[in-house]
Each structure stands twice: as structure tokens, then as C-alpha cells.
Length: 482
Length: 90
Image (cartoon, rainbow over all chains, first blue to last red):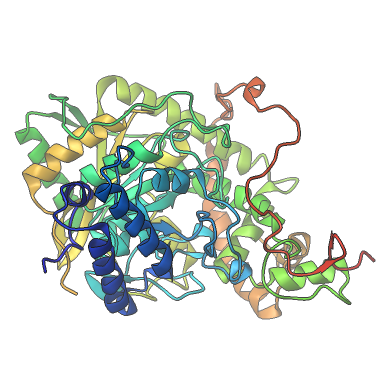
């Protein structure tokens, strides 16, 4: 029988609708592959074999009975980052604190995927509470890069990107607070999109830094990502930060003569092999008759400290809720005094989470608030103003997704500041709320390089157009040998 | 300069039980990170305002009781009668 695991979202839905294969046949191959491959990759925390098979059979029955209500993602295997609630399944955030937590409801994005007839195959590994850039800060051990299993997969949505690259699911959901979708997409050579802030509901996403984070799709191709966006984006009464109106996305690039601005500081700040690759991408855009120019962004030097100040401040506040009373791990409160119980259970947070809670409390404390947090929020205004003027002249801005190539597991884990610095290229989109995508741009020493494409708020279609044309012209997309 | 005493105090306020070893390690790491954040202080305040929410608060839902679909108390481990059990308040 043909191997179905490598099919794109479009190919899966067409194949099932045309009865070339059944949803059950497809999902069985996916589940077999997870069983065989995931011992090497460690992308999954939970696999929902039973639920996935039941859903596949339900779709097959619908097809068999020629029912009209077949969803646009019928049969597609999706993985969900384990900080997004999935009714009846564990949602652990890769933390000891939530090891036994079973979601009592579906996040809006998950609900919408299920309504589109996608099949949730399991929950994916991440840095604890999405705090990290390599998936090494997971209570379940690191996710390995499918291109070289000694290397990090990126993070924090490492499981989401690695599972797609390793053909363990067709698409996945990640969350992106400072690059957590785009970084692992770049390191694993897949496509990842952080949508405009407010275009996708965060209801059911376990909060880390609310003003920065967004749920978004990861897929093998640009069209995979567009199809998932059509299913998940849009207003949600359960998340009042969602926008009133969000467009539908087309898989046929319409726009021509896209004006491209290459962010000079980010290209120059990257490893030489990466800079070269991004300049090659610009040449390719020029060949596609795009107008390309280099630009200089002044607020970049403030963006990373500003991002970490805000993210940690919000984290320290969000994580205050973990008291282990209504949910958490098993510790009988009998005989404990309130404060002692709290401190005892909360010491189960991992080292990076604790570090961020402490720094977050520090920057918010009296005497330091004006020096750090307030200034960081002002930087967001400055950055927005600068971007606004750029987007009058350019349709998209391009840069590397990551300034470095994937590195060995354990290489940076003991140096937190060094680890934070690799987020320099991605945080701009989170601070300003604009959409940004990482798309495979090439390889160096068999390790992937990602191109980042940013556009103005709600201009995802422009990103998709440029990315689809680039994808076709560059012909880089392939899968690792595993 | 971030002192060990400050780390200990912040740990206490955040309800985190930190060991001496953790305090030792965090102190040097956090000092380095905070020093990196110091560049923020050089942003000029002229003409700048902190970012605001775009939405109006009138768009918030009505402040009234709504039924939650699903079992919100599914994960409660310790109960007594119809109550959730917690540690004793000193």
C-alpha cells in the first residue's frame, strides 16, 4: 500500500473524498508511524489512538452515506501543542504541576478543527508553559530535531514542528509568544505562521503572556497552513480580544509586484551561512519581479529586552494561579498551613519557569516598574510607529527567522541570556501584533534555515502569496530520512 | 545589582520555595539578565505613550452568571461534602 503519511492537507482531504483511501487507512498509517518514529523524536506527550480511530470511522461513514456535511479538513491528522485544551485529554504544559490535568473543555481552535472534521491524533511536547526556545525545558525530555536527532528542534512548539517534519501528523497547532511557532518551524524546515494578534481565539490556551501570544498553524506547505487558518481564525465570544472581522485565505496567489523590505540589522546579525541564504531569497524574489530594498529598523536594539520584560511580567502574574487546590498533582492539603502548602507545591515548577516568575516579579516591583515595564510598553508604541511607516512603502518585510542554525541538545541550556538572545528576529511580530511566517529557505551542513516574512496587521494573504510563490520557485521542501 | 536577599524575598512573594543552591545560581543569572534589560532605561520618553488596548470595554460580555459547558471541577482531588478541600488558614 502507498505511504500516506507524507501527504499534504489538500491531498488527504481529496484522497478521502474521492475514496482513493479511507480516513481509517490513513489514520492507521499515521498512528503506526508515531509508534515507530516517536521513540527517536519525542514529539508527542499523549497519543489519542482511540479517539482518532473513532473520528476516522465517523468520517468514513459520512463519506459512505454521501452526507453533505463533510468538513473542509475531513480526515486530516492534526497534533495539538500540549498547552491548548482538548476535552477529555491531558493538557500538561510539559509541567510537573499539570501532569494529571485533564481538560474539561475544548479550546476554540480545537473545537473548530473538530467541526472541520480534522482528526486530533495527540498532544505535542513543548518547553514547560511554553517558556523556552528549544523544547529542552520540558518535563517530558527534549524533542529531537528530525534532521539530526542530536540537535534541538527549536521551541517552544518543538513537538508541533518536529511531528510535522517527521510526518507524524499533517499539520499541528502551536502557540507563539516570542517566536515559539516560527523558531521550531525554521529549525525543522516546515512552514509556521503566527497570525495577527486577535485573529485567532486564545480561549483554551493556557496563558503565559496574554498580550503577546497567538495560536497558529504549522504545516509542510504554505497551503496546509492556509487551510488550517481558514478553519480556526475568526471572532470568538469567549475571547474578547478577537477581532470583529477576519478574512478568508485563498490558495492561489493573486498579488503580483510585491514590495519587499529586507531588514538589514537582522540579516547582518545572523550567522554567515544564514545571511547568505536570506540574500539568496531576496535574489529569488527579485527574479519573481518583486521590488526589493534593504531597510534599517531603529527600534530593534530595544525589542528583545522589551519583549522579555513584558513576557516575564505577564508570566509572573499568570502563573500565580497555580495553587494546586482545584487542579494539579496529588498532594493532600490535610495538615498543611496555607502558605506552606502553596510554596511546597509551587516548587514543582521547573527552573526556567521559576526564573521567569522571579524576574517578572522584579521588573514589576515598586521602584523598578518605571525603569523596565513602562519603558518596555513604550517601546511597543515606538516599534508600531516605525512599522507603520515601513508598511506604507513595503508589502512585506523579510529577515532570517533565527540568527543561528539548530544547535546540539544541551549546548545553551545553562546560559539563559544566551538562549534568550536567539529570539531577536522573532519578537518584533509579537510586540507589534503583526503576522509573521517562517518558511524553509535552504540548508547549511544539512541543517535547516528559515526565511521570515512579516506583513502589516491582517495582511496574512500577502504573506501567503509571497510564500507560495517562493515555495514554488525555490523548491526546497523535502522530508528527513528517519 | 541584584542581591541574594532580593531573590529570596521575590521567591517568598511569588510563593516559591527556593533552595540555597537555587538562590546562588539565580542570583548571577538574573543579575546578568537585568543588566541586559537596563538598555530600556535609555529610551527617550518624548512623544511616547505606552501601548493601549484597541478595544472598548463596552464590548465585554454582560457581567452575569453563565453556564460552563463541561465539568469545571473534574480535576478536584480532595473534597469534603460539597466543598473543595484546601490547606488550613493560619
